[in-house]
Amino acid sequence: MIFPVHLSYEFYRRNIMKKIVVFTGAGMSAESGISTFRDSGGLWDQYRIEDVATPEGWRKNPELVLEFYNQRRRQLLEVTPNEGHAGLAELEANFDVEIVTQNVDNLHERAGSSHVLHLHGELMKVRSTGSGAEVFDVESSHPDVKLGDKCPKGYQLRPHIVWFGEAVPEFEHAANLVSNADMLVIIGTSMQVYPAAGLVNYVKHGTPVWLIDPNVVSNLPAGVRLIAKGASEGVAELKTLLMKR
Image (cartoon, rainbow, N blue to C red; front, top):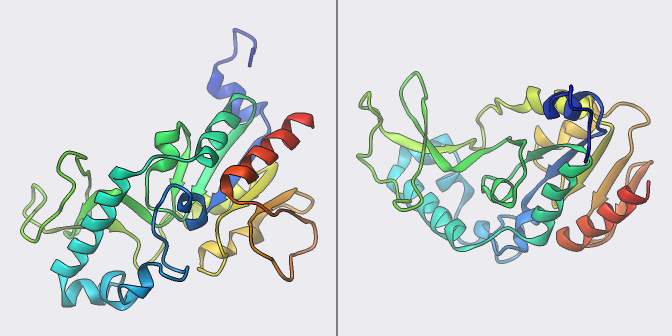
């Protein structure tokens, strides 16, 4: 993309390029081998959500919770971004792309996406249980977090994950992105987890909405265009359609 030399790329991106907001869920990373919760054989078949993804579970058995996320972290380090992740990153050459994701993995970033907002936290980060809730990166060479691992202020570290029953601090930021989008693309999410599923309500009237999903989708809202494919094939088709336009 060539743009006038007196304009910074960031100015060009924010003020001239069409803004595409992409909302991704577990299906986005499933093709990379990341286990999902909702599918048959997924993580909910192995663990009770109350035990590993709630504040109550943390208070009851923090060691179990830490080990659960240690396992997820080790798995993440063994997989790579798929072609869908790469395709979304490539769209940045021609569009202002903002990723809003329910996923806690870092595959969007590893694929090259520059602007990723994590609604439900990040697996490769931990935060203090103290009042400041400071956030720290987890080193890939030492991915496990144990009971007794503390922040510099002496508070136990916990996963930097938004658990069920906790507020979603980035929701307002995400809603603002969606409300200013020229196009919304939804990939790999059942749209059943709130408040994230409510983001589609913030789309401006007349804004094109695309849904990439390989499954049969009943009661598709009026105006939503379906690409009935998985993430990688669906993103490839979307790219072709966008470049034709």
